[in-house]
Length: 274
Image (tube, rainbow, N blue to C red; front, side):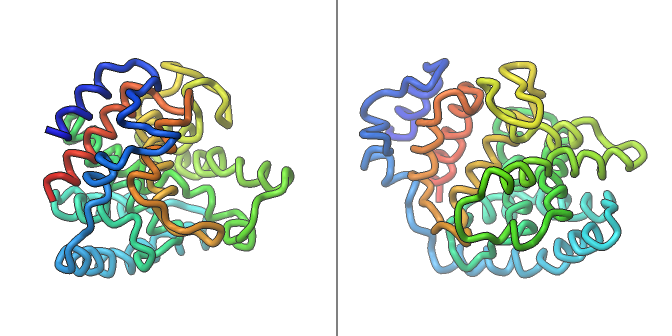
């Protein structure tokens, strides 16, 4: 009943004006927290650790080669995505983003974003081929960060204006690497270049707005922010799922409202089914 109520309320909204019983003082109300923040069992956590341990050598090898050669091995990336296409692997990763011992590097973040995009794409009823492209785009969305200074990526405090300018070059840097691949899918290029665009036009690198932003990038923007908020970083603790959703619902104009409603419904349904 609670999951259905949230689904109906969210689906009925075209913007970020959310019913008071969902958001209270900028936070998800206790009733909905109970659904979103349902604790994982020891078995679920152990399986998640096994999946990450299995994939870590491959993902680290992929990103190490990108760092060394400034070239993306698309076939290696596709193999990782095929592993993530398993329903069990996908659910495992999207439900463990907030566990602080699951890793906090670019590779792990990319795995989680890829899994989120696969699950979200299926929830939206997209074809399996499109879902694969979403997974591939999620895995490679941050490759541009591999050529940025490590000290900057691991900085434990707020970025200066000059540092922020450097950080914001990563979508274009990543796009430049992927576009060199013969037959690089347009969806992957769009995700890499536009995942930091905002629905209200205040994002980067091109300040696109609304439906001018490619649909796959609108999906990526939601998954990327959620994964970042629910992961531990040098400068912050991992937020709970309810804290992340509350912040995203309160970020008026950042996301496509209909897609965000669908994403919240996906997470709530998935958590309630655990």
